[in-house]
Length: 374
Picture 1 (cartoon, rainbow, N blue to C red):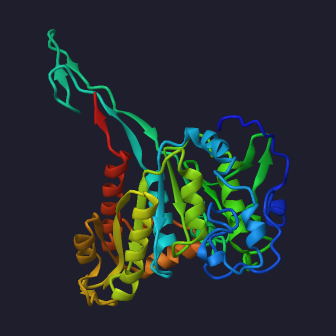
Picture 2: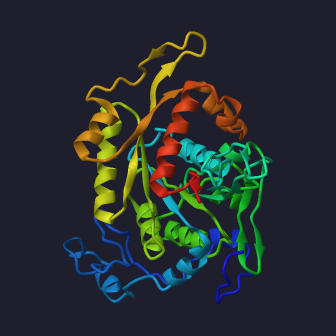
Picture 3: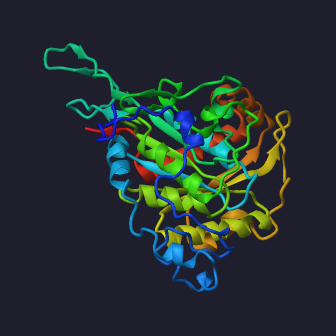
């Protein structure tokens, strides 16, 4: 159960799509290209503000930290770990990998292994009377995972986890209820609030920021071992909002997704620079679509040739961990279309084995998915 907040929520989620922002300056002209933002500390003061019709309005607008950040922190008090999934370039499989990470972690068990008095784990021992004494079973618990889709203009996570199933968010006295894709995997996406799967979201930055805040402040996430935040490509409004809202409660790190070619790596380097400037720990980089493994002969072909050494060489140059390369497998896309788990359906495939290795490394870095001895 999520901690109770001072504010009682009675507003249906659908009204959030049409609601205006609670506090926003009434601008008299569109924001210029290099606008620092009307809520920025530099609003109305920066060089880009000179000559802007909104300069006086922005200069007098409220500044400082968002007053709802303490509510976000309180709401997420039961969430033990939080990771971001980022990509500088679109189309590299970031949302697909977010879904795979969430599915795999939510299917894992964690616990503590009990040792016998003579230190023989998992084997029968003989006591002083000559009777065989079996070791006690491991104390295991399920890992509960939340997946928050902040790609507001391209929300594909619900399709990947639920297939063609249509779901709607329900409101309780404690907030918005996430949609449960399984007993241990909760999902929140703007797709659950749209009238149809084909409805477009045409919003500017402030509107996006407002809904992301509500996903964190008003959703009853409860007690989670891990919250995975899927972000859109780039380094823009959604990324800044997530990082600022989660700043007080803490982010364990980010996983960056890329493909081998230099065109994708160019944008990933920008994403790395964003993480450094925003103070986000980089858990590692995954090279997705790294070759194609034939399901019949198991031969591997390079589809996107790494002309500059690929993600591994980039990680060596940038000094960040390389989590592994995952080959193309058409069955991943098919599983996502039907809302099924590729890892459960095809565990012996080369792609599934590489993904398992990436999940293991991420788990080690955030302290999740490994058993400990007592």
